[in-house]
Structure formats: C-alpha cells, structure tokens
Image (cartoon, rainbow, N blue to C red; front, side, top):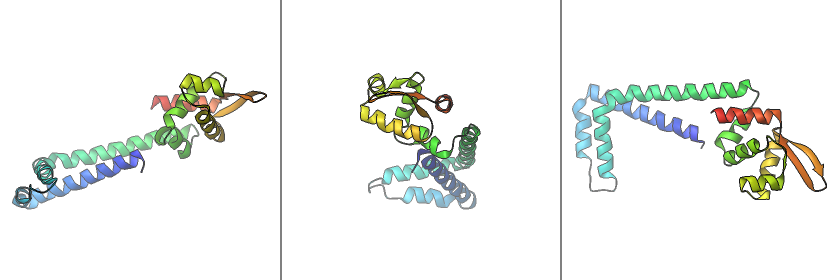
Length: 175
C-alpha cells in the first residue's frame, strides 16, 4: 500500500469513528460513557482502548468535522500535485518512480548529479553507490527518457540528464 493511500485510509477511519461517536453522544450520551467505563482494563491493550474511547467520547463533536476537513484537504492537495505533474507531461508511473517508490531518493540524487555529463564510476563515487545500483537506476530512467547517453568510449558510457529529466528534478524538488 502506498503512503498516500495509507494516509487516506487512516483519515477516513478517524472521520468515520469520530462521526459515529458524535452521533452516539447526540442520541444516547450515557451509552458511550458506560461503554468506556465498562471495558475491561486487565486485558492487553485494555487501558489504551478505554482511554481512546474516553478521548473520542469527550472530543468527538470537534474531532468529527476536523477529520473530515483534513481528509478533504489531503485529497485536494493530492489532486493538485497530480494535476501539476500531468501538466508537465509526466504520467503516474513517473510520479511513483520519483516520489513514492523505493529508490526514489537515489534516482532523484542521480538525476540532479547528471546535470553535467558523467560516466557510471563517477556517479557511483559521487553518490557513494555501487556501479550496479547506478546501472539499474540509469536503465530505469533511460526507459522513461529522463537520462540519455552522451558519448561512448569503448566500455565507458557517459550519461546526462535530458531536458525532461532536468524538468522532473526541478518539479520533484519543488514538492
């Protein structure tokens, strides 16, 4: 599950639970208090659960609208970032590649380092990576047209970021 999906799931859960507690407090205020006080505290997590119910019981009237507003703001922000991303011609695969997936920071560091042409060993030394890691990330970025071969001298290949790659590095750093 991606981080943004996990955040949305947590926010939806919080909004639903707090709204349920707010409704229960409105229609049957004593029932929630009884539930919080009658929960057994001698079982593992019992004290924590009882405390959580008491917090929700006391704060659900303000927590419910706040959690729904927070969820809405997050969804709007996510949509704006995606729209800005699409405006520059990058699809969701590139977004995942540079923002949410494993190795995204390494690819971004490599893309920034390739603003000037470099060969694999230079990149590996500059970024403290192995040449195999550099090779794998270069291959991935080449597939998306973000890195291009500048020159080849025998077995040494010089790479540089394309204009699209430089634009992407700037866009990600602005996030």
